[in-house]
Image (cartoon, rainbow, N blue to C red; front, top):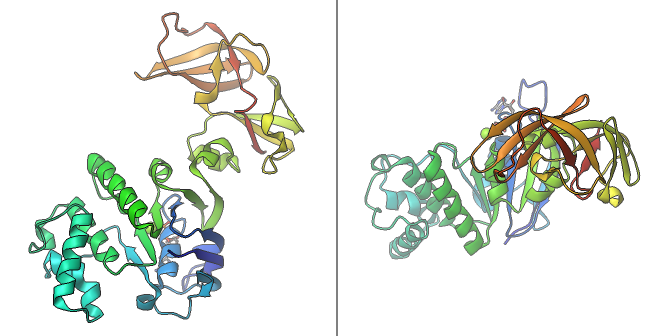
Length: 350
Ligand SMILES: Nc1ncnc2c1ncn2[C@@H]1O[C@H](COP(=O)(O)OP(=O)(O)O)[C@@H](O)[C@H]1O
Ligand SMILES: [Mg+2]
């Protein structure tokens, strides 16, 4: 198990004006799965390649267990990368693909064969060692690529959007497989994705990147409850943003004042802020008047499992969901009291 640290890592490609990655600092605890999440072009693959040793940073340092690994060439780092498009050797059998890393190290044939069988069983693909990659489905090829990476017992496993070429049900299956293998082997893993849900389902910690910069590094639930900015909150599906003034435990807005439980949290900004609350955290027509505001239903969208409401609160509109369709469900035009639980509201800088 290996702890990975990046310290002010930057990459400027030749001819590039803006750095592809700038001042990237983070620590990946040993044996954990961290997701690099962000829109296309934000620098995820570049960062992964710098950890793998496939490209060299323009500045900064990278450590494995405290050791500076930048002078160490890719093949000796013990970090292996699995690419989005698998990159299997088409003219080699599946078995030879998987065993390739061991063959390069001069491991005996018999030992390689045993290890290959073990790896193919691990990725739940027994009995296909003799086939060619072209005879496999995309999902199977991705598993072979994973087996090929794992056979060398890497210190660090780097997965670059491994699910994005798979269709929906295969994606779920492969995601669960990756998670169970990662937990079983406890190999330090970086999983790159642009899909927020995928990151949340898989990762112990998420590193959210925009424009080459690390925006927030936190657990999945912190991204929902403690986003660092409105942009981060919106990336995670946040919809409700109300201009506010916060002083200590009170958040003042145009639709009323709200008590704020997380006032002691150092991440919560003061003064000119924006109150945010997730649609599923808003309660409708609670008995209490505290932390509530009067509004009117403007739109009602039945989604099946739940109902979405757009609610006008004076000048402000918020979205709320109710988990079940109640017999006395709210209709468009109905008056409604929205309640923001003090432990569910959050503030971000204006
Ligand atoms: N080899 C390269 N030469 C020049 N620019 C590159 C190269 N690879 C990536 N870039 C640029 O660096 C930025 C980050 O790219 P990348 O790391 O591939 O992002 P992501 O994986 O998040 O989509 C993008 O603006 C991209 O165009
Ligand atoms: Mg990429």
